[in-house]
Image: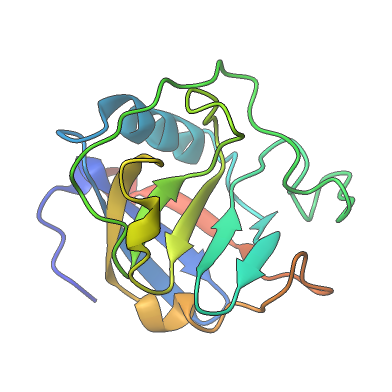
Length: 168
């Protein structure tokens, strides 16, 4: 596991194959970082499925309204919701959508990101400047690579637990 230099801005995401350590980027996207930490601390991401996983592209999750596999789960609705918090304004930057980067999922409206996010499997430079980047996997990308593919996957993987390292 990677050394955690800033526990307050580090996420530990537990997947079926092990922990994924994500370094958040508060200097780049402070509102997105705060939202992720707020939802993680509330346990909102626990048991939420990866509802859109495209080989060679990315794994998307974070629908806390419809994606919790333990709470009124309906796979057809996973990916259609967010949290009860207001949508976030875009925080575009020069940080690239590189392998392992965390991007804010949104609708066509750039200011519609809420709780959903994706982890890039590859360098996806065509997303640069169009989607907010607010984190980077620093350890455990091999576990992300094992997430079941599909749109949606028939038996989706889930985030078992998501927590802020400072609280672990």
